Length: 632
Image (cartoon, rainbow, N blue to C red; front, side, top):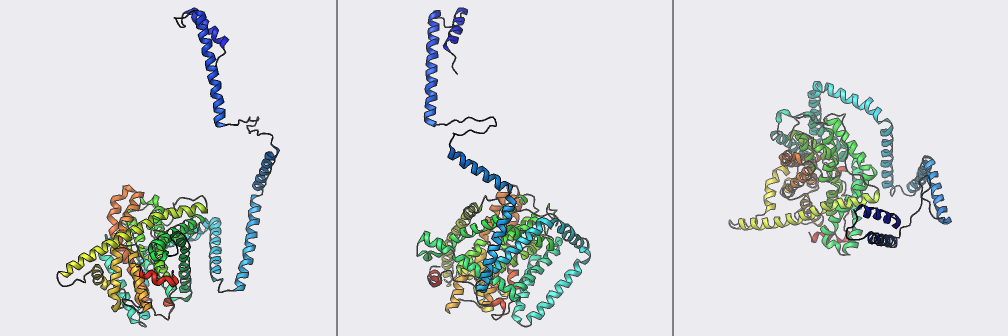
């Protein structure tokens, strides 16, 4: 606010009389100067306020005594606001009854729909029945957990855990000997029907001996996680491969996975055109990674992933007595990629023991994520075998890891009373989860594409060099594949692969370890397609089962860098410990995969048994499958 001229004149006059004003003017001139200056300031301020109002067009409303804004007296606007205010008040007051009424209405409508679907065609409604049962079980579990979880844990789980821990030192050797003897007797009786399965048992024993010989602390091995890991693996294998209902369930999952993969065709066709299948890897498999990343994020947002992972982690922790953090990481690795698994347990990596870091890395190497699983199905690998291999390999990863690198430290999460918490970021809604999951999967797709490009280029260069080197001594057919085949033939034979297929299977195993699991999947898909067409090389159905289980893991040399980068980025202060265990963990991951493959070989019973019902893989390209294989 500018002062009024009369006041300024009086002040300037007083200043002039006191001799503190301008010295070159008379009193009248000084008063005139002040008056002119005041007029100019007033004019400038008026112009400035006018320009601001014109530029910003700000409408200023007054507030009442309660601080609420008084809007213009517009009856339409005020009416709408009153209606909105009344609706908000009503919803706030009757929120719970309205939610109950809405849920009951939806439940009744779904019950009517479900009944009509089951009455119309039970065969068509099997998938709907399975999903309904699964959702109902999840709701029941959540209800019991939220209301009685603490009571159940305190009254049942903790006393049982305490009892076993208290008496374990007395009965552990007796229990171990009894369990191992029962398994041994059962295997001898079972394999007597099919003597070729005995070789897979020999391979299982050889893998355990190999793990013990290369243990970091062989005198510190705790055998409880090892024994329980094998027991859980055998139980899962029996349920999945020897019971009709277990095999049917996983066959159903395989069928749904194959059908689910096909949905990416719509996006690929729209973005890349009708002839997208001529570039199947770039336009089918890489978009599939984004699709799976988005679906996983949505399942995480609605809470389904947390329920499954939490219960699997609890089962591993309770039976094997492993720490909460490494149990959680192993359960996560069944569904998520290596980097996503590290994020899940991010807060624990900095305080983990070295043995736990080794176990976490081994779990990531032993299993395949949902994205890799989808990519393998897209290439034509049996979905049922890949799913069962990933589930069975989880306890094997912890068992083998605790042989390779036993625990010699005290971990903050080493007791069963501690439960590790999942730490992925929350999404605001389903749309945010969909977009966020797809964006998070972009680096994975780039990694896969870049790895394929570089590895295949280097492989071709290596083969050219080996051919040139072999030509010097009269063997120009020398190649990397031949070296892998001869080097890994003994391992393939020990796992129970038919001898005539060992050369091809050894090549696949070697390529997987040195290059990438997807490179081996691609080669295996061509071999399986050759069997359908009556071409060579090919392998028998038994060898297909064993090699699929052996390949279903991320344990290859290129994965070492990815695991190190993910873990060190979260806990850079542990870089020395992480770099010291990743190579050993990669070897342990392969040993766990071979252990799973050996158990599958022990339980194999031929094409007429549930373990070898007709393949459930649906070709992703139908009539275009021939074109796809011709581009590989």
